[in-house]
Length: 352
Ligand code: SF4
Ligand code: SF4
Image (tube, rainbow, N blue to C red):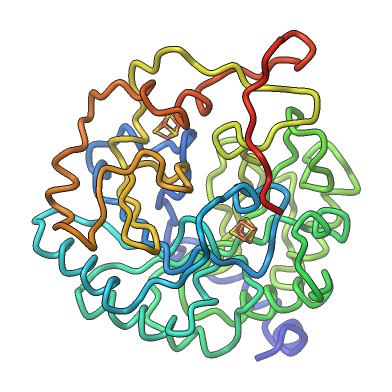
């Protein structure tokens, strides 16, 4: 069903669906700020698999343009190895998420990859930028879908460097899918972040214009939607229908990778504890394993599943490890200062 048809026939009905049927999307996909890291029930169970580190966008607010890895697609053989290792490890995996860097739906065997995860009996969550969504996705065995819509207007959409794709077409594609989605789906929007003033156009609860433009988009699906009444600072999902929700998230700096001009990061000298490190398992498209979903290029890697069993790699992860030995962590936990106050400047070069 198209967005337009949906509006005509179902718009009133959808907001009358009882919120008690709403499935709460509580899965953590955040690094650094995620709130489930200290919950023992979820610790060590979240597995991110990067089907590809290739993306059809090149967002100014993403680590992607800094990544030095060569672009590749994970082979189905390697994906199956990862799933087998997980199954045989005895770990209580709460879900497998196609996420990390890149757009998973670009993978030529995306459908096969979804089926493989289900063959091994795991709950499958997919994060997508939404540009490749179509009706066929509804037929896939995806348990939850996260759409990183993020940019609610032309200005912010420019930050995505989306090639020939226009904002209107992007918005229409995402909302068409959201309106007809048969799987629990959450649309994500970034909130304006005052510490990143160069990234403009994101949602701002204090701006009437910004509130209006988000309402106009969401009301095509849920006519009674009122941003100010629904908005919460703790980033909880806002139910829109029985299987659709909206979530505002803080715009991230990707562990201090994205910083304003004229600022530099002074690395942290010690990191006594980071709960992200004990929380996630991330398997990159070449099989590299890292334990922080902010570690986009696997600089904290302790092994590769091409060479050994995931369980062995996992056993080398020390929950109490001093993370200051990793330059990426020192930067992540560093302090932003004005460049003029420093003689030497740590650098991260953009690969764009
Ligand atoms: S934020 Fe998502 S869509 Fe944008 S470049 Fe990164 S991976 Fe691609
Ligand atoms: S990069 Fe290191 S310090 Fe930062 S969130 Fe990840 S594990 Fe923690």
